[in-house]
Length: 74
Image 1 (cartoon, rainbow, N blue to C red):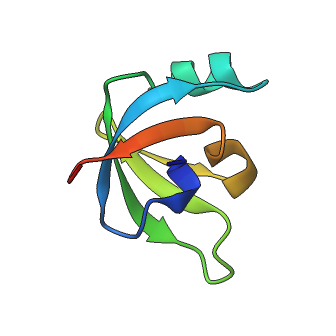
Image 2 (cartoon, rainbow, N blue to C red; image 1 turned 120 degrees about the horizontal axis):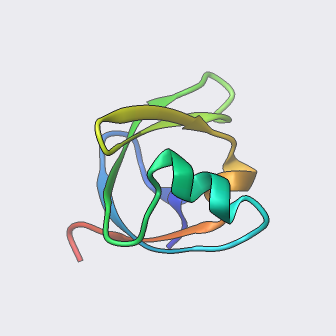
């Protein structure tokens, strides 16, 4: 599953980060093994805000697709 598919207020664990923004996403705290939560969704569903490592980060869906996650409930 991709990060852009995580529903509002749900948690997931980051499995892998890829794409051209990989280094920047790592710098923002999107590291494998970290817990992430979707906390805000804009009115047009893009961007969404995620809580990761006690920071609130807004990502466009095209960038969130580069982050593979596992739903916490799985």
